[in-house]
Image 1 (spheres, helix red, strand yellow):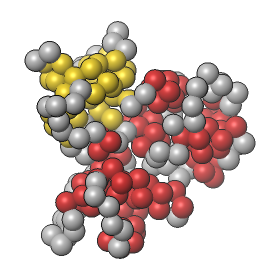
Image 2 (image 1 turned 180 degrees about the horizontal axis):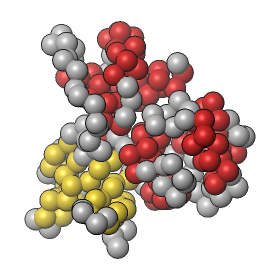
Image 3 (image 1 turned 135 degrees about the vertical axis):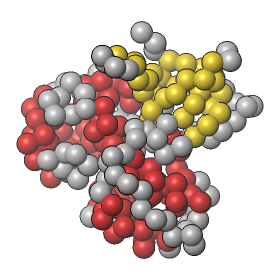
Length: 203
């Protein structure tokens, strides 16, 4: 079982990144691939979780050990698969997530794609009191068809909308925040995605 890889990011998409380690390219599915940039100069350390099923082997990547640990705890909850776990972790407010579990805030948890009231209650039931070992509060291909993108949108915004759909947000939810995102200004997809997730959680 792998713990982490150190290598160069050679490709970034809304669904996954490719990390080259000693001449081998590993496909890693992440909550937010745009936290990383393609670079042959700077090596990245990415923690990994390997999921083995009857038909395939999938590698999931994480920015730090706490994020990986939180993922492992989430996928043990009945009703939460790897896709839902990644969608939950895509929101950078992990402290808010942990606090919601501690305080039985089911309403907060149901804002994540694929998490209904029953699943949210199960998350609280299974994880409450079991997150104390986290030292700090911190693509999966979507099943939806990609909407026709407005050609006037910036490349960063286009990538952000694609990433949201990959995470499992509904097309109507994505369309609802596209207008305010057009007035948002940033120089990276990561920044746009963080703002988009903030808007989705706020709504």
